Length: 226
Length: 294
Image (cartoon, rainbow over all chains, first blue to last red; front, side, top):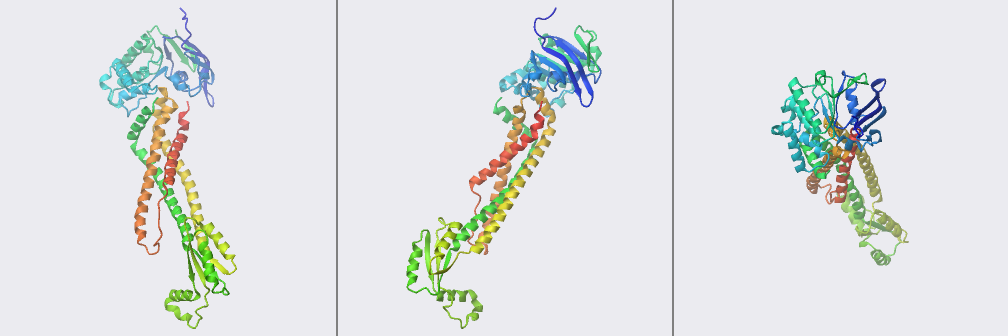
């Protein structure tokens, strides 16, 4: 059944080229509905990360346009970009945590940038850390945690301000099977709560038995597997 | 977003990157120290030139033909001039005695010389508050035009030499100031750039979670403000201590007896400190420009 709402993510004829002649993405057309969970797959260098970077406006497309929640990113000034990013939680393979700050401080960062009061920040961060099973380790530094725990901190940071969209760029790439399953469970839970998830991975095991939509990228071109 | 959050982050950053912050503050402090030192030298030299010129007073030589009964009249005329504090008549005989005293052991050279061969003169002291060097020059020209006056001296050559020297020092201070300004801006910007490079991951994460440029740049600007403030205050305090110490030594110096040294006016100190703060904030803004794009 077709959704009545406009897609939360829309890519129209999006291409991204790097000088002198590297084409990372070529004429991508894609609609992702609100609440959808989409796997983005493909070999290394197929353009998965580039596509995600276009979605959170870390880069601009060479051609075409990206719309997030009805807003064309080409119409956004650089000063408006941070406000768009607050609607998107991003999770990376290498976690991207501040190693000199505690788990609590890392997660709190997403709330501090939106100017929440200290008490509110504390309450929300504790809630989220409890959700990912790290409340007891909130005063630890990231390097004192296992890889799976670090990734859970990164997930907590991405979701603590309750963004409607979550982009995950190979979040299980550095994790063993058990930790990967834990991450998948967390992502499923977030999706069940209404978050739209774009999950980039080259691990076929994660999507081979799923009913989710899978978008396969080959040399910067999109092929919908299902 | 509140200033409180930015200040808290700035203080946390200061604690975490104490070594780099210390290095930047030292660079700022040294630059300001050199500038303040030169400024102090120039300021005192300028004051010395002013005071030297006025303390010399004027010596007014009379024509040989001036009649004795004209002396009291001239004395009164000179004493009536506005700003004149004292007038003293020096007769040819007194001038001769002074010359003898001055020659001391070589006074024999004056043997057989007519004790009245030196011209009579008046010595004028003027009010230092009223007369600057230009006005003394004008007064000398005015008196020199009187018919009985042969010559008026007020140490023009010395003053002129001192003025030239003072101008050279001023030029050095200006050039050194401008060079130091550029050097300090460059060094501060480079140091901050290194700090920013070292914290690139942090900036990337901040951008990722939707931090605005103000949120990213704010703590860096607060740190720069503190570096400029602490660096300049330390520099000025160091120069002040040196001034106090050297001032104490010079009091006992025979050569510089009577020369009063003074510290820079507080308005000048305030300008140095605020310029240092502005310099650091400007350097930080320059250094961060390219890190604040998309």
